[in-house]
Amino acid sequence: MDNVKTGAFIKERRKEKNMTQKELADLLHVTDRAVSKWERGLCAPDISLLEPLAAALDVTIVELISGERTGCRERTNELDCAVKNIIDYSEHEMAQKRKALIKKIIVTVILAGLLFALLIPTLNGAIRGDGFVWQCIPAYLCAQGAARAIETTDAQKIQTYIGNSEDMASALLALEEQGVDIWKAEAKFLRTRLENMFLRLEVEMIVMYEGIKYQFTCHGTYRNGKVEFMDIVNPSVEQAYPMWMLQLNDALSTYDPG
Image (cartoon, rainbow, N blue to C red; front, side, top):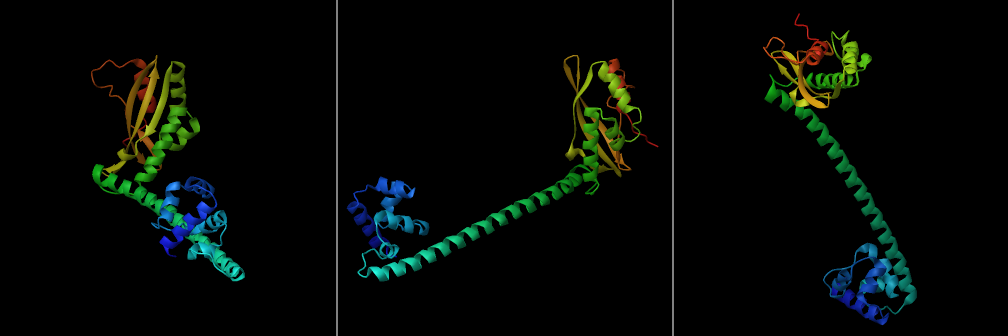
């Protein structure tokens, strides 16, 4: 295709049809700037536009590509049919390539996500603990389950995720009756690490009492498939803790050093 010759032909036929560049552009769902570029020979129409452009100008695709009228109409129609088949095939191939590209992008994103998920515990162990251990992942998942169990006061889940927790559910329910509401509890993945051969973890907890929010950090360890929590406050320190806080501390402290 000679862009200059085809462009001049498009311009000639457009004017013969008494159409402006904007009107032709609207028919093809493109901008008048694109039509202007075609007519000046700066670029050629996209292959997907050849058929609708030829129809709009009342010419054949072969005439549009060649940039001139052809004498033999029958022969031109045969060629036009062949060109349409080529265009259809080309568009089909491009659609297949687009689908293949989208699939590759999706697979790449998934693999990158999996790689990222594998690297985080590695970096977490290397930076915050004694090195990488695969147990960081189940430890965090168990800690997250324990956090949700504490937040919802679910006795069954408390037994599932938290060790030495036989009386925890009833103690938390008693605190709820006193107005102590565990408003939010969430395990922190980046604080799950191997330290001194123990899997350490932390759960951030927000407690609502008499309209005031209190934030606690529950330190714990993961062993035998369950979480065990240490004191959230230290009663031995000479500080006047409110009774409800000491009761919450006793309810959550399940760590058995033995």
